[in-house]
Length: 298
Image (cartoon, rainbow, N blue to C red; front, side, top):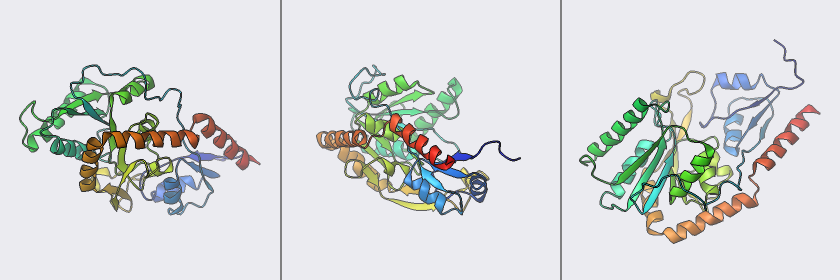
């Protein structure tokens, strides 16, 4: 059916190196496409999309995302804590949560002063969901030779949190880990940067639109096919690739951030200052969106 509107604009994104033919076909039914990052711009342009594509970034409220303030957790027994934020996906570990846990357990197996806060869920906020994640964490411990309740401390923060609670949770952390295999933008990475946390993440993703490799550790990576576990017709198909991070480098960088905490914090502050200087605010994002819509309506 013909659209009643003068122009139809699609705001879309995907974390793979290209989109599927079905996705591209839907995009070509629009008059224009808005994407959040230069990574998405590149991947969409390689996917036979013929309509104009424009970058409209996301933003953040720097007045709320401040390093100083109340914390969420008051039961942490460890002096230094890493934070991971991401869904525990059963159809392929796209966020690399298992790799993160394994690396953490191996590095800090003899250090009781270091913890890992996992903000995650499988499909929801229920008790069974939490029990399933707890069981998988325990399974990873056993695979690495730890007996029950032995080894480095892992704190599971399960389910959904309000924005206010998430901000408080970031304040519990000393560094942020996300060796992801793909991000169209990476909102938790932006939030962690705004909170002044040292960050280790994968290079080559949408987060490069706002993170600076001078201040943030961006891991080397290889582009590899997505694999059968992620297969989702029209969304994830065999011709697409994800950025697989170098986990040996990840392990070295986790150790380095912990050993050089003062330098890491100094670099993280510079990253936060640069975000503010480049005006990654919601006000500026809204301004760019309004201008883009106006351009296409002329």
